[in-house]
Length: 61
Image (tube, rainbow, N blue to C red; front, side, top):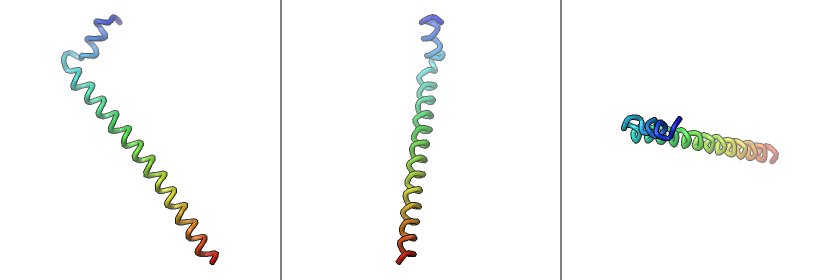
């Protein structure tokens, strides 16, 4: 693939800006969803562990 062919492919017939912005925004959105989900999962695990620890402490008293 020559440099001119790659340049033509990347510009996608003058629609390249729209296409690459759509790909970029989709990638960023999916990345943020994955990060947010992982953070929520870890927070839920911490909350559950804290609840279990508090319940065990209350049972021992």
